Structure formats: structure tokens, C-alpha cells
Image (cartoon, rainbow, N blue to C red; front, side, top):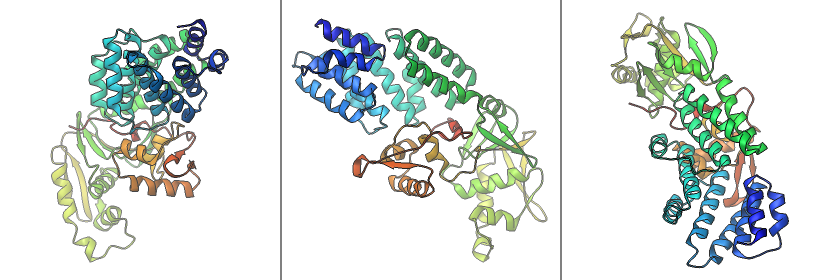
Length: 405
């Protein structure tokens, strides 16, 4: 490797993309193309970066497997940054194996970190945690070590393990300072703010209170019966009852929990469940939903009939609370993902949320019409983005926030 390529690589390692381009901007040999691609990615021109990296990968000879694998890893990182979650993960696994086989442990570790980050984005936390358990981050350079700790913190935050998240963010901050990359330090700082920002509303006994993540962790670890409107689950004593696919039952459960220790009239309960202004005979005929809810919650609570309607009766819990999003914003789960400030395609949003692309598209149309998100590009290149909404932390609305058992 010649001196200009070496100097450009060192500049890129410190985040100096313009300095790197000064060395190799006019060169078209494969190593220069690859470094130019990485430089364009650091400058934000992701489309140009992908073109350059693919040209470099094609230009490397059959005996240069390590160079081609490095290009694949760089392209995978660009795909994650641009939220192209349909990028073939198998290609990243192949690159990881090639790098590890040839002794390039630093880039092999970086490839594994990217796989963990991809799993985190699409909400596959169990798989991400299994990879972390077997992952040795020591070969990573300082900047990548900070990014890895951010991924560890991201998983811990979604699991509501705030002490683990704080420790990981502290390690990320130290690594970012050592790397002396301002953008990385800013990313770590922004991630740390999530732990100290209001994250949800607590509704209990007719009162509303704002909670931070550590408050939520303490609430879910208490003896209270918690109806979680962020993830549509009911939690008690470490057990989780999911009602995510049963919206009517969840609406009934939330209404009963908000009224506890009082009851809810039959008319109000039916109107809440079916969102109807006037209750008719067709709604009354569906009182069977209360029986279905009683069966679903049998391990945690009973539902007793009263003179006016129904009341929730916890079996062992001393208190009942509703955990609600910080705002009743429509399409809050879509906004939760868009709040990271990156540009997302509708297919990537659908993959991350586990919803159909058409459902996500309808939500994006509504949000665009209300001026809450904006579209960039056209056709298959169309992306949506929004700046983070002040006062609207979204950790609990992200996919796979809690394991259901």
C-alpha cells in the first residue's frame, strides 16, 4: 500500500473525510475507490459512496478477498445509516467469515457489530443479545468501540435495564473522547439524554404523572399491575400478558385500569372499546369481549360485574396503573422510529414495526398531510424523515421493547 493510501486511511480513521480526499480524490485504482467511498459516506453522500464501494469491490482481483470483504462491510454500514434494512445480511456474514479467516480481526469484529446493530433496529433483541454474549470487542478501534457500546446501551434501554445502559454509555463516552471525533461524541451525548428525559405518563387513581426510564423500570419491578399502553401488554410480577394483536381487549383493559378502584359503566366500556359515540344493539351483543378479557387476564386479575358495569380486581397486586405514551399522538410508533433523525423507507419501517407496508404508507400519508414528517425523493428512492420531537422520547414505542412470557 502506497503512502497516499496510508495517509488517506489514517485521515478517515479520525473522521477527517476532506483530508482523506485531498490524497486520493483523483485516483481510480481499487484501494482509492474504496477509501473515496468511505469518505463520501462520512460526508453524507451515501448514494455516491455505494457506487464507489461497488466499483472498488468489482475491481479487486480474485486473490484480494479481504479487500472485497472490507468493501462489503462498508456497504453494509452505509445501508444501516440509510435505513436500508432489506440489505442482504448474508453478505455481511460472508464478509465476517472471510475477514476472520484471513486474520483481519478488527474489521471482522466491526462486521459482527453491524449485524448486532441491524438486529437492534428491527427489534430482534434476543438474537442481538446472543451475539453480544459471544462477541469480543477488544479488536475494535476506539471509534468503533464507542459505537459498539451505543448498541449495548440501546438494547439495555429497550429492555429497561437502566443501570446497564448507563454503564455502557459511560464506556462509550470514554471511547468517544479518546477517538476525538466530534460527531461521535455528540451521538453518545444525545443517547445519554434519553435516560434523563420524560418517557411515559403514569395514570393511576385519577392522577397523571410523568416518568423517566428508571422510574418505569422501578414501576414494572414493583407489585403493581401495570397496563402498558406503549406496548399493549399487561405486566405483573415479572410476567407479561400481550394484547398487542387484540386491540379491543386492550382498550377494555385500559379503561378498567384507569377507573380502578372504581368501575366503568357498560355503555362507557363499550363506547371506549369500539370507539362509538352511541352504543347500539350490535355493540351490546359483543359483551362477550369482556369474557375474553377475563380469560386473558385470569392469572393477574379478575373482572367483576357491578351494578353499573365492570370493575378490575387484581389478584395479588396492591395497586393498578396505566403506563401511557408521553403524548397520545396518532401513529406514535412510526414517529418513534423516525425520531432518530435518519431517513427511512416505508419498507424499512414496515420491517422494523412488523406491519404491512400499506399500513405504514397510510400512516406516513397522514403524518405528511399534518406536516409531522416530510418525504424526500421519488419512487423507490422515496424516504421519510422528521427531526426529533422535543418532549417526545420514544424508547417504549420501539419494536421489541420487552420480552413477552
